[in-house]
Image 1: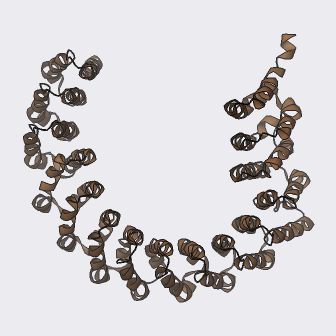
Image 2: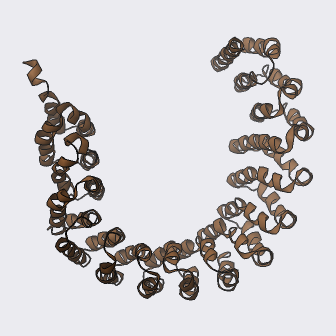
Image 3: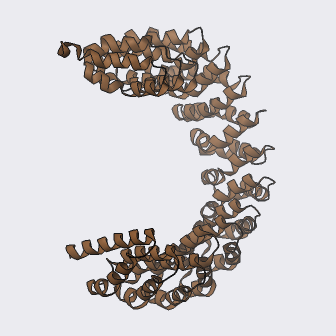
Amino acid sequence: MAMIDEPLYPIAVLIDELKNEDIQLRLNSIRRLSTIARALGEERTRKELIPFLSENNDDDDEVLLAMAEELGVFVPYVGGVEYANILLPPLETLCTVEETCVRDKAVESLCRIGAQMKESDLVEWFIPLVKRLAAGEWFTARVSSCGLFHIAYPSAPEMLKTELRSIYSQLCQDDMPMVRRSAASNLGKFAATVEPTHLKTDIMSIFEDLTQDDQDSVRLLAVEGCAALGKLLEPQDCVAHILPVIVNFSQDKSWRVRYMVANQLYELCEAVGPEPTRTDLVPAYVRLLRDNEAEVRIAAAGKVTKFCRILNPQLAIQHILPCVKELSSDSSQHVRSALASVIMGMAPILGKDATIEQLLPIFLSLLKDEFPDVRLNIISKLDQVNQVIGIDLLSQSLLPAIVELAEDRHWRVRLAIIEYIPLLASQLGVGFFDDKLGALCMQWLEDKVYSIRDAAANNLKRLAEEFGPDWTMQHIIPQVLEMANNPHYLYRMTILNAISLLAPVMGSDITCSKLLQVVTNASKDRVPNIKFNVAKVLQSLIPIVDQSVVEQTIRPCLVELSEDPDVDVRFFARQALQTSEQVMMSS
């Protein structure tokens, strides 16, 4: 009897758990649907589990979202593609719920299942589902239907295709703005499946309706449609139909629509081609750069380099650079920050002379900006300018600013400078680096902020790799050793960190002759944090130095630390001793 009842057990448990008041139990049950389906087998999953899920009217969005997600990958558990239509009813119900994320997930799962279904099944089951949703009384169903047309349309017979285009057109004129928004955002996907002849007639007339919608939330989604449709149309159609819309949108009364144009501008330029961009879109872009809304200027400023790539340098200097100069002193710090993050990329486009004459003064003014993010964005892209104007000019004009930023009161600015130093060092060369920046690198090791000290230690390692052990031995090691006796234990800890990073670069001889002594001396420190860091550093040195050094110097030191009164010191010392034993056994 037990054997007969056993297959019933999973579905019984599922039903119990799905009706449980505890949401976590209901969620766990839904997330185990695939396991339950495997236990039941394909036939019972089709006949019992899916109907039960269709009738399940759980009102918790989290449970419904999990169900929508699970059903999207359920095709193998119901017997493969032939039975995929069994999964449509529960997902159709989920497409009508109020919570947006549940509907979106249900639409995503329906698209995934529809993409696997046979053409005949799509016509018999999927297309009627789309039509039912599109005619739904409640707006949620109509919103969901818009995301399914691109799956339904390609396999439909000619009569049905005409009907689907007509239904989509009606959805674009729906009374509810939410439905029109959904139709606008899915238009690109639907248009990609429509035949070229209907694209120019039906789809373009739908698109024109959306661009003139009285709701700005619909119009701004139509901006995305511009880029998507532009890729599907022939260049001349694109110029005739899409270009006027973009130009109008760039002057739209709603700033959100203008923001969307500024954000999508590069994609829109690609859609209409280089020539119309130069004649029609440059004035539109200049308007956006001078927009009275800061958000629009931020979006436009962030695209300035990409846009200039489409133009020839002459046009960029003539039309875009005056706007860039204005933006560099914009009243909004976020506009200046957006500009600073991309302006360096203009140097290769404009060439050496224009960069020196026009861009360099802008760089310098942004480097002195009171807002740290603006300065950071400039610093992080300095190498792009260096490639164009050469190191001599760069060092004369920018180095004073870099030195000033190295002592900036904002620690994130100092951190950005440190991370840039190795790249700067490789471009400036040893001599210049020693004169100007060497002292700064040592100064950072005693910064008040831990992240700066840590980055400074990593910086020394990268400099050692760049300039080699001999240079490091002469310029860095003596100063590091000198700092090892700093009265503040946090700075002594930074030196231990620097030694552990430098040792692999310096090699065994210098580590044994210069660095190891400092570490073993620190094991006598009165601060436990120093002592357990000594154990960690010694552990990292074991693979670098000779076996004899491990035996004679490192192990005795670790044995002593392993008997320390402090529990953490003992723990790390014993861990290091285990490492030394493993190394000895393997060698």
